[in-house]
Image 1: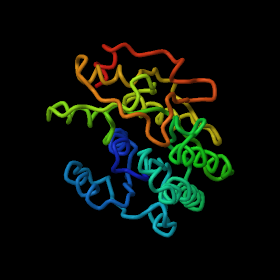
Image 2 (image 1 turned 90 degrees about the vertical axis):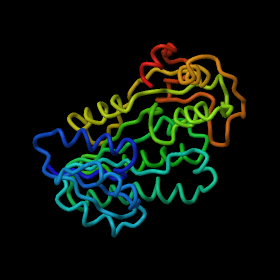
Image 3 (image 1 turned 60 degrees about the vertical axis):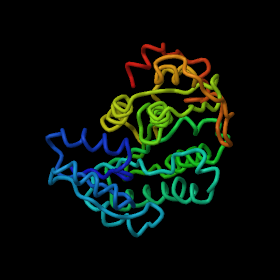
Length: 274
């Protein structure tokens, strides 16, 4: 089997690469991204000759043609994911998260890829900001492209607790440096899951996903304050800054499943996940 991970140098893409390399039938894994340095960093860690690297940009359809040839499965994980960045540069977010998604899907269909799996976010449900609106549209584009050639399906999940750039890493550094931590809204709730849980969901769709289906992982949730207490190991002082533009107080995984009403993690459960 030949796999392509679009956005393969991010936190999830890197974890997915490790998982795919454990499969006996894996002939090649193609890492497609626009960041040369991150690709170089992965090359220093991974010496497996089955991994190949392709520089390109989802915004540029022409750069997707060659790496799609002969691929059986595509995992689309490339996106601008930071809410505040998408708010500040909405047209850039649209170019990557919306038009880029359309480009990836069209390239996969043209190359007669067997299956494409889109990674989406809880922010796609009842979106209030640019990032959520882009994810909403990305899902709609996926569904609009359903065809008889390529199986198009997706997954939607919440926050990956130890992903690169997450608030957990920010808090840890501030605590280590003795710098006061900031919380947007201590009572805001967020769905939390581990990278392994996200991988398991994607692998389920890899095996079972049907065209036009978007699978949701019904994760537990916690408040921002509870997550901070788990990271800091006790009630450290913090400063409240308020929700930023594009952020919701409570997230939704489906129209009926809110992080406010979902089953909650205990502090000890959160500590075990960190």
